[in-house]
Image (cartoon, rainbow, N blue to C red; front, side, top):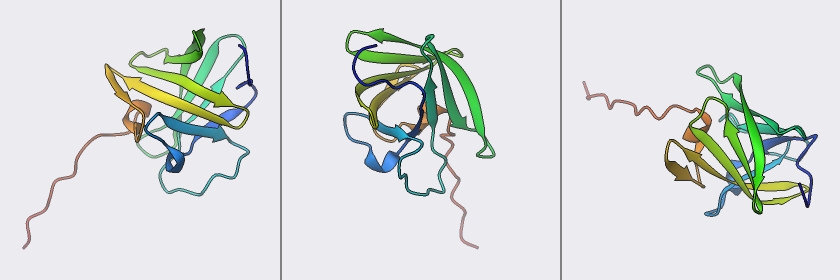
Length: 128
């Protein structure tokens, strides 16, 4: 892998910085604002393995093993369970910009559903 190394870091989705190009991830050691909403995380190992950490039903993190490889100028991360693909389209020592695809849908902004969050809608209650 050329350029800035994304290894030996746990990357955290900082959704406040998302852009139309993609989701922004910062190293876990960066100053990241507190949030009530769980933040997805990812780790890449030099051997081609990856780990995605997504919020479960009770907001505790669930590890999803995956793999990564370079495809042109991008790093592509795929969940071993299938259905989720993350493309690192820009990277530096302290920032990754990631485009997320899930089951044929692509999201760059607010794509938390690609990380396992529920898409259920709540029912409106009738006034009594």
